[in-house]
Length: 226
Image (cartoon, rainbow, N blue to C red):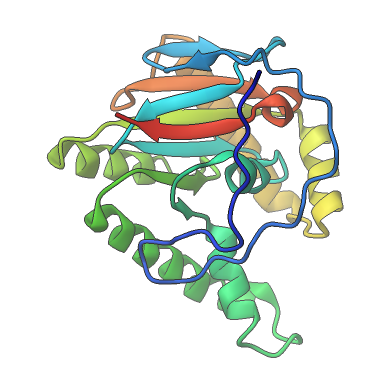
């Protein structure tokens, strides 16, 4: 029998912020195999069934990457049994404090500064961590990898491989569209990332897991254990 874990109403955040509880997910068919996978290399799981659980070492870092609308925030909020640093939390933080008439483009620098400050604090706090990454800034992964290595930890990568059409549908579903220019930039970065993976795991990453959008929906948990 598969064990299930229900998240509490508030997820702990190492930066001291309270992360809002996630809305209950719609009923879905579990197609995960129930197997616990401990990623250690390059795992292409885009074909179903997928493992029910991805289990990482207790103090390691996991970066979740993919196109905007691919389901990164949903996956992290639903599956991660660890603190999550998601740029969407920073956007919501500032949106709640500014008049609704202020366009996001004007306060985007505040959102980014707030996000990276939270991320830095979380890294210094130690312990397992799940980080949102759209993949357009490779230096972020390099920074995380170097910092983790200095701390005796390792960096892992989880990529949600959705088509542009699926990502656009995801954006419509969440009511937050990305401009054509920004989406094209994300698509180019994703193409470069997949080209690099053709040669194996990325430098600085202890493991890389590729998931399709249906596979991400089938995954039950992301855990960090000894």
